[in-house]
Image (cartoon, rainbow, N blue to C red; front, side):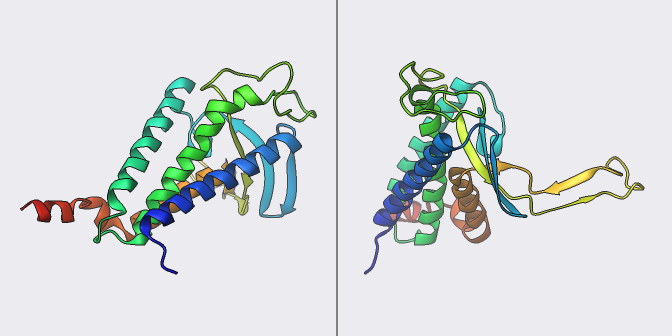
Length: 210
């Protein structure tokens, strides 16, 4: 069965958001803050929270970040709705844009609602869903839940190296979630295989107007 680009975009966005939220709620209600589970030497589940953007980066205040995400997702979905009917846009490009929009949308739910529907107890207690005493923050001020940690390899820089000599280096350090991964994968594939569509996204529209 042939899947239309519109249906493909819908399945990706809805699927990623649901999976992302299920995983975050499971971690939030089963792990205490800072708890880690060793799965392999290169893969761990570590429960942390952050106020920032993808991979825990910080940019501006919390309200600005949340509003920025809402505007970005709205523009992204509007853009996808414009390109799904165009014959010159391949499905892969639509899929990448959908991954980015889905990832941004997944983190919006944390910011909007997690402060209202969860408490934030001190370790080793785990969070409660819909606590009687109320949540830990107001609307727009929830924290983003992260859990994936991949310390793939590490080494000590040689002493003779300038600036970093003798220091310990660990790759890969960021702790992230499924929404962050969707954004990163979407951007990476977009740049790698569909850069021409980024540079001239309105080719068909311009030619039809002339």
